[in-house]
Image (cartoon, rainbow, N blue to C red; front, side, top):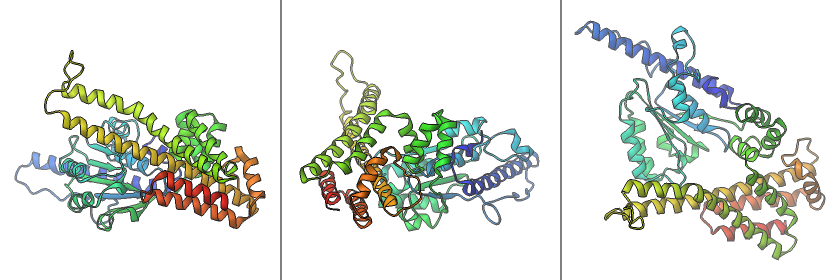
Length: 419
């Protein structure tokens, strides 16, 4: 299996990355040959490397991957990172880097390679302190002699100060450092940073391609894989979760019932509260799975004193408070993300309604609730459906502006009723 196999529906992009990986391998090979020549003939001026970062080389030091949610930005960046670390003997015989089997590829893909730093955040933003740590890491020479690769999966969450810290490292990188930044759109990254990156755009993968990868990679039943891929309209991560998590399917089913439950103001307010409560349950579930383990590990690392009720040594309370603050911010983001996911599902429902009203010959994303879609379609007009879609979009925008979630969702459900 090549490293590109999980980059779904992006053939043109993978061809570009594979070409860059070949040129990157040529750079390393040429520099290694020059080093060996210097060792063999001390004092003699070596010939310049046959490949560099200029001219016709497809390799560069900074890349920006953009694309809609679920398009596989991070997957593509991690696959490229693995190809840059490929040590397969086949390369010497003309094979392309990125075999997927060698130690370099394997450890890069699973996140244990010493020269690949994968940065993702559970928080609402990435601050100056974390970015300075990354910049320091990027200045190190690669331990394995190939490339030092920094994959920043949430470049759109860099604060302005953090972006300014990152700028100089992207402008003047160490010789063997490569930055791979991921963001939903080019506008989500500071202009000064994006102008110094090679930009690659991913598209939403076809539904069939997503279903195929769920069957091949995750062993999901073909019918369930097709249903999940169609329901999420090609969003790879959400499709996998929907196909494998019963709770995710139950929450989605509850969201799709909402349009039938907002006949009066009382129903609107109740539906809004239930959406907020469901998002809160998601955040609580993550906390139960992650927070307890993190807290116990930190307490052990700080040397909690046995036999004293786990009392911490003096001077360590600040570290515990910092962890608690981080967990609180992560809970806020988890709740926001869960609520946004529900709003995306609701938008998909009304898109299906509009498709029926306009007589469009497209498959329904929510075919399992076709009766509900037909009922809403028959009882309204395309104009009302468009206003309802706009109400959902307005709610998402309000949440992005940090409007109180319950107020934003209540305003949306009332607008959905009015149509």
